[in-house]
Length: 114
Length: 113
Image (cartoon, rainbow over all chains, first blue to last red; front, side, top):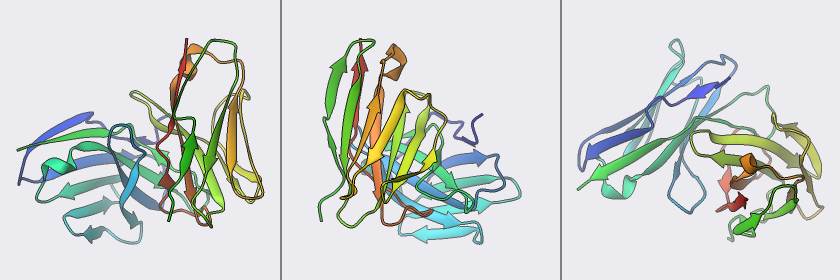
């Protein structure tokens, strides 16, 4: 039972344009959402997060939007740069769920072409 | 500040053997969690330790086990290895393990032949 889903395994975008990565979840108990970026041969690194009490969070070129009614979140990267090419994972957690347990999606591989 | 260190980085085992992977968290971090990454499956939670106690466990068979030492270092063990155990095993640490960002190591790549 995949509680967090990233339905697009890959995404290709031109440099300078917007990248939009999507993520859906099924568990309404999730109240904290995160995005991680992973380069080959490296561990995932934290990118940005959002609490369920918000619907938007920005950090530089990265913005995460949360639509609780649709159980959907998205990561916008503007403008996209070739260095953004990586696999992006969304993850979710719940207050009920103590400890470092995150439920991850399958990942979306972003390719930003110069 | 040193990051999360995992050893070994790569290893090859045969079916039926066992393996032990090690993780040294960021200094001061008391929570260590383990994840398995396989192609198409994303990262799947194995277990989490906080102050030497297993606080959370994922949906993996009993062949997967772990422990945490008083210095917060952690080990995970997989016994009676199967081909399907081939994966990247990632360790992550955090200050208290509450919902929030985890700091991942580079992982241990296990290949089972």
